[in-house]
Image 1: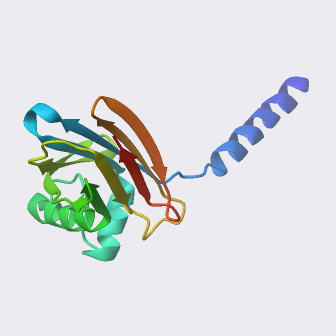
Image 2 (image 1 turned 120 degrees about the horizontal axis):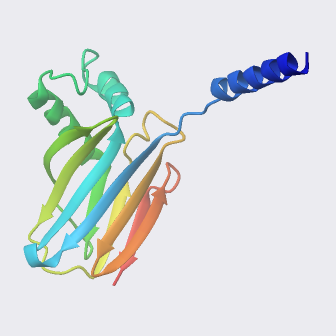
Amino acid sequence: MKYIKRLILLLALSFIAYTSIHKYYVSITKIEYVKEKQSVQIITRIFIDDLERLLKERYDEKITLASNGDEKEIDNYIKKYLLSKLKITIDEKETEVVFIGKEYDEDVVQCYLEIENVERINSFSITNKILFDIFNDQKNIVRTSINKRNKSFILIPENDKGMLNF
């Protein structure tokens, strides 16, 4: 009888634990300044389902990511969205961020961007509003490697900007 009670308790706890799982909304943006190439290289990782939901709401309800659909059209939507939500200023001058492409890595979309012709960086600021327009509890983690210094930020809708001085 004790065995059955323990088994029922264990099953009940397992059921409660899995029904109360909270989904976290997070993106990770890695930024690296490669002085030899005079380039700032950016990789933004976003969960496929979160980005797909945004693209459906904003652009086309038929979009399905990672399905071998019209990748050129999907790239255009992703580019348009990212460039509207990601702003980078170097030495107090707004930069032109170039969307290079994307690839799928299991349940994540890795988006590749670049800022070219950067001779040096004395100050760097980033505004990252990715997915803030659909998830109130979205967090955007930004990790930088600039001038041999590593720094990280967690940006939220109420504080969407990070700044570094060298």
